[in-house]
Image (tube, rainbow, N blue to C red; front, side, top):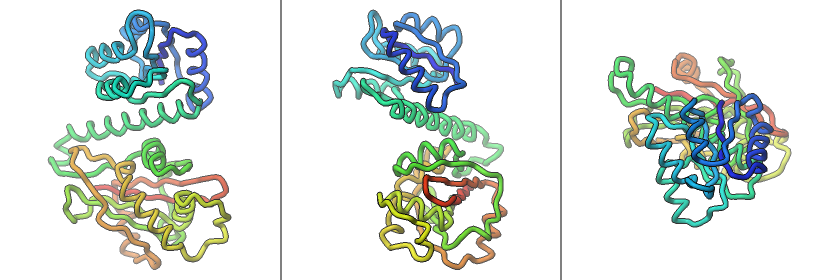
Length: 300
């Protein structure tokens, strides 16, 4: 990952760089510039992945820098602001012109890292969708969903439902042996009822996310039997409202959850369907004090 940090304060340049290095970007390459003109020279020498810029600088402003970058490159880098600018109209203008994030000074290291991670995940998902969009020989022009990878799911779905979960993608697991009951949510495209997506959570995942969504601090290892109805309601609402954190839709078509249900006794045919699907991603979910849960996402 290649970063370009633009600010007329040497102290802020150092703070931003160190913040990112401490939160997942230690191996990244960092460039710095003290004004927009020098930033453009460095961009022309080699396009960075992410540009983090101040707004108020001598000469060209950060907003003007954003305009030039967006107009000059067919595939521009991610551009975000770390700034003291707080005028709602100006911030809205920056977003309309493609700013990926805007963080006010002073800021926390975690706030900056989360904004950068989420922007990268959004860009990756968009690029994946675009890649499939231009492969009609593969999909025949059909409408379909794409399962997102671990990084996208971690920074889109779990970020949106406000759950601190570590997501690790695994190649396979013994699906039939996953602890029950399960939650299964089914998704369709464009208001139609034909199922194009399926998300399955095993019992530990349901417990973990359910208690996090409820904001309750309790020892869930004792709660291995029945989930309270309010927990299921929270899970269902999260799956319905944040489904686009699990899938991408190359056609840009809308999609929605058709139904969500708890499955106590799993039919072997249902397991067979999950095991045979090619468009499948399996994730292990871990959170402090919780047993490891499993999330399976399937798309077609």
